Length: 231
Image (cartoon, rainbow, N blue to C red; front, side, top):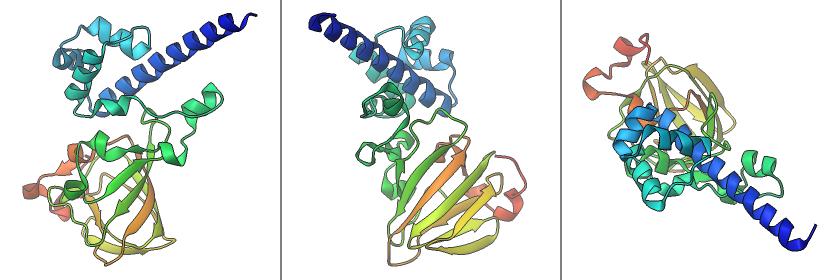
């Protein structure tokens, strides 16, 4: 096969792969935000059929459309373009190199000062039944707008370094390096670093959850009264 023909074939394959990746990212964020095709298409001012084609990877959206989708989903458009390095399509799709981790604060649309931590995505996508991340709590981190969380599902974690104060219901538990935990997230919960040293942990949560979407309002944040209620 002539070199020029191979080059064209590779470019077509790469373009197709990028469209599929973009469409998958849009669909994953839409579902994480709890939006339907209809609601997102209305917010982004595009047709349902065009949005569906974008998500399937069969349509190439304009830059303006990408920005409108990002605005409607409350994220930066950069989120749709994950850095995917690797020699083959499986590696590019399913392996995350350290330098290619994505900033979950971008997905959450909340900075460290509000959320109380910085979060990196360790999973290759947020399209599965759970996702995994690396959280860093700075010393004396607080979550002023996030008193307690509650939602259906479960959470697991492993402390890599430092100490974390984990609250589950009425109980406050100090976790240290090497400790791990798992609990049903239908129980009201939260975590903070009350020490002078940073704390870092690996966590996984099911289902994919946006923190600000599962905050218990201050007026209802009594762990005892909320512990048995589903999120």
